[in-house]
Structure formats: C-alpha cells, structure tokens
Length: 401
Image (cartoon, rainbow, N blue to C red; front, side):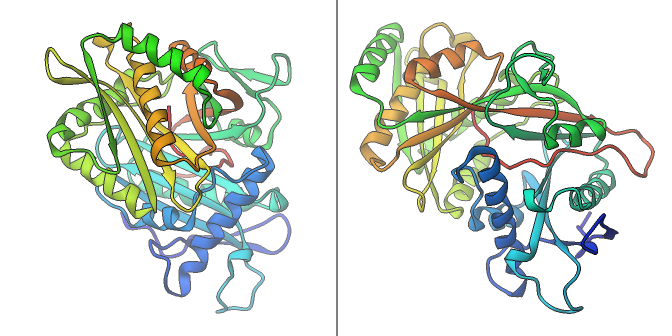
C-alpha cells in the first residue's frame, strides 16, 4: 500500500482541528518542514523525559529512514493544528506531534511498529488520537495483525501501587504516566521492560584493565576482530548469522516475533544506511579459531555531528559459545577502539531486557548506571476493520542491547 499524501482531518478537543501530513524522505523542497518538525517534537519529548536530547533522531536520520526501502518500510507523519490560512506552508515550529509506522518486509511480517509522540505543551487536544488513527489505518491496510510500540520513562519507579510490573518479573513502569494510560486505554499490554543505562567515557583503566585480562584468560581459543565503518567481505556472511540469531536468541518477553533473516547483502545495506545518516560505527567480533566461525559480536554507532554520544547497537554471544566471557571480551574491545578512534566520546547509551541478568551484570561491571526504563507494548488486532485500541506517545530511541 502507498501511504496517502495527507491523512484525515480530525476534530481536536481545543485549538481548532488537527491536520496530519506525511514526512518526506528528503531534506530539500517545500515539504522538508515536516522533517525538521519531527525533530523539534522529539526534542521536546526527550527533554521532558530525560532532561537531554542525546536520543533525539536528527533530520538526516528521519529522512533516510523514510527513503530507505527493502527490509523495512517506514512511514512518518506530523500533526499541525489546522488554524493556518488555507494553502499556507507550515513551519517546523507548527508541528505539535509526530508518528511512525515501520513495516518489516521479512521476518515478523505480521507486525507493525507504531510510535506516536506529542509535544508535552500540546497534549489532550486530540493530536495523539489523530496520529494513532492514521497509523492504525495503514497497519490494517497492510494486513498486520500485531502492533508493537514502546515508551520511555526516567527514572524507573519504585515498587508499589504507582508502578506496573513487567510480566517477565523484572522491571516496572509508572502506572499513571500519560504514555502508560494512553497505551492501556487503547488495549495494549505490557510485555517487557528494558533498562536504559549510560556509561561515562573514558572508562578508567583501573576498571577496564582487570576486566580485559580476565575475559581474555577465559576466552582461550578465540580471536577478536575489530572493524570500523566497514565489515570485511570475508566476514559478512558470518556477521549475518549473528544478526539473524539476535532476532531469536535475545530475550523478548511476550512479544510476538519471528526470526528476522539476514544475509551478506543486508549487512552491506545496513552499513550504507548508517553512513547515510551521518553516523560511524565500530564492530568487535570473537572468532572461534578452531572452526573459523564468529561466536559473538558487539556493535556501537555514533553520530558524527554529536561527538560526545555513542549508542550501543546489538550484542550477542551464540548460545553454544556462552560461559567463556565472550560478551565482556567484545564489549571491552569496542571500548578500546572508541578510546582510540573516537576520543571525544563521553557516554554510551544502551538498552537491555530487565530479565537479561547476564548482560546487565557485564554492563554493571563496566560501569553502566541505570538511567530509566522502556516499556515494550503489544496490541493484537481483531479481524474486523474499524477503530481499535492504540499505542503510546513515545520517543524513538535507537535499537540497542
């Protein structure tokens, strides 16, 4: 299905009417205001939640995700209050909300990822509802039967009546936050809670050196490879195996997910997409020297125009190679490379399932400190068309583990 050029006009509770407009996949032209408006709303949401804008998607990332095609189709919209003169072009400052629908094209093709976010200064005016209904229309038209979303909170609430516990038994989210009530009112269920942690850089050698030494001793028979901004051709197939296993081996709570297959071409495409967003990356992988195959990897990415910020992407140790400190080994190797090639980096953001005790223990040993939590929501659609429950006003953090 091709997204309509403009979504429905829906009455708002106050301030006139809400108009939904598509976000283009480019930064040039008269409609680029929607890209910059998306960034502005993300900035406002993240400042309210985190007190900073490290996690906000920049304009290049917003546009490139819409322009990209193949493995995941992404549609974005913005909402403006329709009180401007007819025919006038909105400005980025006129944008009061934004949404995204991501449609996997292989692996979990029964799902749609839907994110809705509203500027805190413009909530309770029907903006979130308008964005949700436009997104829901697309998800249904595409035949998706499961909708997943997430929302971020900082800090994690203490146990008690003001918190909702994850069904996994690990992690909590605030029960009465706008994002929580918006999700629950529309029928979403909480399936998992992720811990958001931050590591201050550089890590002191007094911390890193003993960890590196211990991991190296336990990982006898493994060789570490470190690649910056490009993975050598001879390792693409093996890295694709690790990425595929990431989709099945990482804890996912009650989320309805299927294997997401990767091959060498998908690894190449992913690398190109990272560079098109103005980002660089580091990958560390552990090779089992007996078999010549990769057993573990860890990856980080960093925006080149924000020299202090690093995002942890995927980290995985194959089940058959666990118990040898390979996760710690490759994470330390990434940190060593960041210290060498990205000395301006001051913090790494990462997200882990709260029930993933082993990976959390590695992160704590490295010095990661809790910064908040992320709720993973899921809605199973009924077969009939028409209005259905909807998701959370949520920021769009980078995927990480």
